[in-house]
Image (cartoon, rainbow, N blue to C red):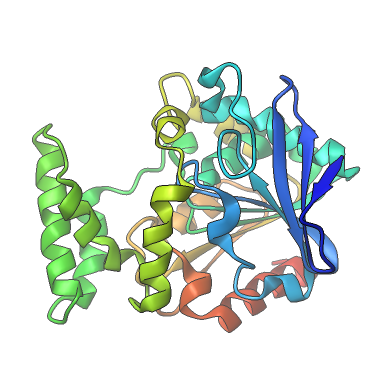
Length: 298
C-alpha cells in the first residue's frame, strides 16, 4: 500500500486490483470502516465529501472507481463496464483485510453494489443504498414519473424554469434526438433539495470529476442480467437500507421500496426535503439516519 497526502484525518491510499490497475481510495474519520462507492456514473469520490459528517463516527473508505479521481486508467477500457468493476470492490475488501464489510453506494453505483451483493452475499455486513439507480435488477424510473415528483415544486424559481427544461429533455429523449446541454444544465436544481451556493458548486465540479467516456461504457450492452442478480440478492443475509429523497425523482420512494423488497432483510426510508444528494440538504438528518442503521440495523 502506498500513502500520499497523509494527515491525521485523511489519507489517500492505493492498491492493485485484479487486472493490474492501480486504484485509489481516500480514508477519513475514525471508527468502524464503511466502504463508499461513488455514482455519476463514474464520478470521482470527492463529490461525496464526508457524507454530511458521517466520518465523525465511521472510517470512510471512499473508492475512486477505475479511471476516475486518483485511480489509474485501465489498459482495457472495456472494463469500465460496471460488471467488470465488481472484482475491484472485492479486491478492495481483500486489501483492507475485512472478512465482511459495511458498504454504502450512491446513485449509479447502486448497480455496482447490487452486482457485488449478488456475487458476494457473504461479504456484506450491512448495505446502505443512497438514492440508487437499479438498472441491474430492471427497476427503472420512467421520466414522466420523475416529472411527477419535480412538479411538486412548480410555481417558484428556479424550479419552474428547471421543470420546463426537464420537459424539453424528456421530449428530446422520446423523439430520439440529442438532448440540449443547456436544457440539461438548466434542470439541475431539481436534483437538489436546496438550490444554494453549495449545490451550484457541487454541479460545477462534475465536469472535472466525471470520466464521460467511462460513464458511457458503465451500463453498456451485456452489463446486466436482472433475473440472475435478483436471485443472488435473495442470498444476502445482511440488512439493507435503501434511502430515497422526498424531492428526488430518481428513485422515487415507491421504486426504492420495491428495491428494498428484493432483499431478505431490506428496508426503505425517505429523507424529508431530500434531493438526489441528501447529505447536502440536511447533513444532520442524513448522518444520524445512516449511523443508526449501521449501529442497530433495521
